[in-house]
Length: 274
Image (cartoon, rainbow, N blue to C red; front, side, top):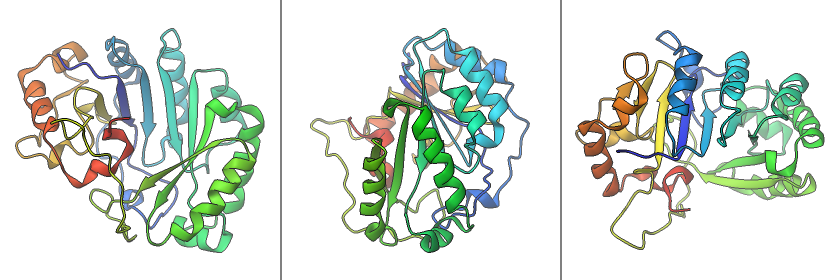
């Protein structure tokens, strides 16, 4: 049986920014939304789950669903991480999520308000910083952090972001930019760092990660379709229960192929050892 600990939920592909690092904002969700109750029941059926990461697009476009999810899994030990561009992260949202086992990751790639317009495609710098300032007064350091994306375009800006994070006593993480799957216009750095395996297993997302999409489709990871012979989802929560999906022969096959997978996404934090 596949026993994931880290669950990723892309609750929408839609976004309210026009970031040049990706093209998700150009698209709309094409299918009906997975009923929140089915999602909650699916998560609670995974006894090994320790963390739920909600991503997008911009996940806060569907705040009411997030509130329902947080309440629905509040009787578990699962921590919910929400990655946001910070624009919809208003006071009400912060006040509500502060009482749950949550961690909010805000994407900030520059502290230069003019360069911000290039990064985001919109003039949202003041709003994001204002929202972050409030969040830093309500949330604990364990509930809030900043994530930046390292590319040739942003490399000279990340020291200032790190300094700002330090001034707010929050953690600052850096994610290497990869072009595959994001279809952005940024340039990958030549010194991307990937953790080298100390044994035969190439990708540590195998047997650890599970990715769920807004339409109910489930994959072992968001890049599963890049693996030869693994293009179809391992299941769909609209049609199957979680136990059926995790125990299927196809899921086991995908898991085995992932262990030897060495695709470019290896530099992402979701599939390295630590």
